[in-house]
Length: 112
Ligand SMILES: Nc1ncnc2c1ncn2[C@@H]1O[C@H](COP(=O)(O)OP(=O)(O)OP(=O)(O)O)[C@@H](O)[C@H]1O
Ligand SMILES: [Mg+2]
Image 1 (cartoon, rainbow, N blue to C red):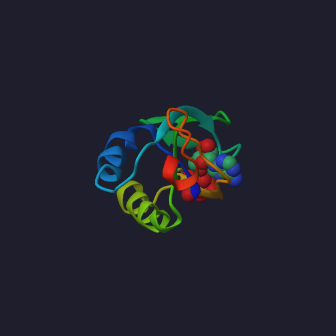
Image 2: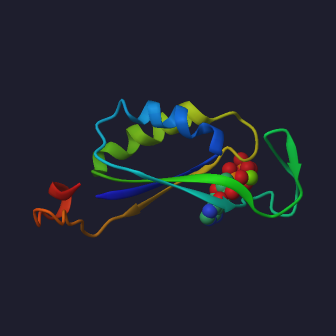
């Protein structure tokens, strides 16, 4: 199992949710966050406003999924949210050691 964390512009959340809904994913979360990337200390445009501050509004989606689903999620994200401008976001992939469905006690990929 893997966890995919996708950090994207807030305005891309709905279109990405719709694109991800076409994949056979069983659950996900999103959180409103603030962050910065390589342009730390420089300006980045967000909704027409130029931010001089370090932290910009972003959305983070987290999905725990089977290993073989990771590439299709990455491809969907990149083809859906890429504008080619700075601040398009990032995808981080990490190992998930275990998962437990509390209702049934199922473990591992049975639980996701
Ligand atoms: N190394 C990192 N660790 C954790 N979060 C990061 C990292 N890099 C970027 N982020 C998060 O992703 C968001 C978007 O990053 P961003 O797309 O600006 O990355 P970048 O490396 O600066 O690429 P670009 O040059 O295309 O802007 C940041 O606001 C931050 O929330
Ligand atoms: Mg950046």
